[in-house]
Image 1 (spheres, helix red, strand yellow):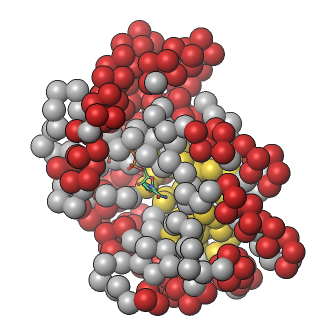
Image 2 (spheres, rainbow, N blue to C red):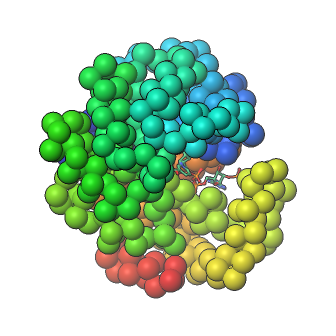
Length: 323
Ligand code: NDP
């Protein structure tokens, strides 16, 4: 495993990490979670990603039980949560958003469900236009001061919004965000590569990137229709299926066929190619893997060994094929 600093911070995250969106509860029970987390940990993964909203809190419950059963030393791994969306089962006005109250409550709930004393990383899952950024920064700073959170960050905030959080933190001597969690893959590049460039330079921010396989599309599995057992057939994820069947989605499936040809030439799977491509970006601190089965995870963990094959000439070919 390779370890990368989370931006300018001293925290070293595994370049490949493991997340639970969609999968935990819907496809993965506690026993399988234990197998997946154990497989990842044995391969050197030290960061496990979660959020209050995933399976309405059940994803954190499952991860908490699995981590407890596995019994890893707490100082050997990092675990995250995210606050903003709340859960469908708790829809009251104080139960979502980035108010000081919800940030504090959601943190306490995540700690209980995950069965840990502190969150290594805690993300504001989306910007909240109805809460002043100063209130959010103060709430996160308070959690850091209390030792309940070590590093706080944002997810899918604009560079302007993140810059505003940094300016408030600097003016008021509060803890600034250390990382962003954006989508990044061969199809979604602009934000990480262009918009956020000043954030790496000016604030030393790190990124933990999501959907590196564009929800599985980059594996090539959708070239011949939608497999029955894939996430696109899960109730509640019809929007993902609709996205795949849109004009842009169909264009992506065709692009993956070209990417697959290049992957085969290089002696790797299209999945590994797509993940290795993400790893090539030095501003990516960790690529968060998603997997609904242990075999998928094993294949994905093999991506790291393929990175040296992605020469600048190959990178150019990939960019052309994905475009
Ligand atoms: P991916 O884009 O990598 O998609 C993962 C899915 O692709 C798997 O669940 C599986 O779906 C399929 N897949 C993975 N590997 C293989 C393989 N080797 N062969 C065939 N199919 C494969 O990542 P996610 O979208 O899951 O995102 C990763 C993590 O990022 C999440 O778990 C979460 O922690 C985080 N995230 C954060 C967001 C945010 O807003 N901050 C938003 C979304 C995710 P299937 O079951 O269909 O086979």
